[in-house]
Length: 326
Ligand code: SF4
Ligand code: SF4
Image (cartoon, rainbow, N blue to C red):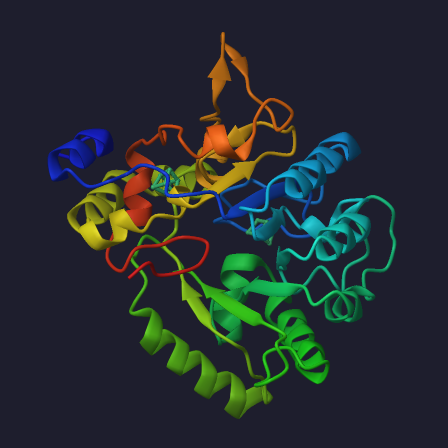
């Protein structure tokens, strides 16, 4: 029997209020060149939802007015497929904020699903604007990566990593960050982030002469496509019990929603990407609040909205889009 997450937080008396908003995560589009089985965003090449130019301009205006947000985290889908991706990330760099792109490594080699445009300019564009790259690589072996992400994904990912290395990404003293993300293939908690990082570094160097900065080990969240798969296999309850049983106080105090705000392609604001996928938005008079309605000062005093999927962030070493929390 699982204790409701909000009750668990009350019982353990931990501080679950926002500390600040130092990261603004923007979901630029649901379009992706891939359609991975575990994708919590349900992205695919057929999705067309994308953030408007007006919302992007509003985000820039908020950054100019308030310096507390130091990092803009661009996600999707594949954020690079947004028509304003180049303009927006250049503007954010001009405002001297850190730009992180959740880059899936294969988008460089597939034509744009809508326009057919080549995306091969991306590695050089990233370097020019000193964009930080966070890329999912489910495993350092082809079989496991392709099983989760689709045939051919591993080889394309390796090619991207080699190109990024040639440009200085992932190399010591270049300041060009290339982080990788591991998530388990199936209903398991990830192994220790440090030991996985050692394995990845050794294997990728030996087999492909690839280097990277850090590895993040993240837990698969029991929502959307992954939850559907678990239910189909009859293992949803078992997985929830596993997450519940591995609840960790230290991880709970370090969850990413205490430092960030997440914005959907339609401008609605959320505590995190996961709440976004579950439509747990903020409302005033039953009307969803958007980026146009908020300021960072007021929103850093909000009450974080939780539900049982939050056990995915607090299990074991903890999990966030930045990997283990403790
Ligand atoms: S690459 Fe990322 S966004 Fe695209 S389908 Fe896979 S998990 Fe989803
Ligand atoms: S799912 Fe979101 S709201 Fe829940 S703990 Fe994780 S980051 Fe916070």
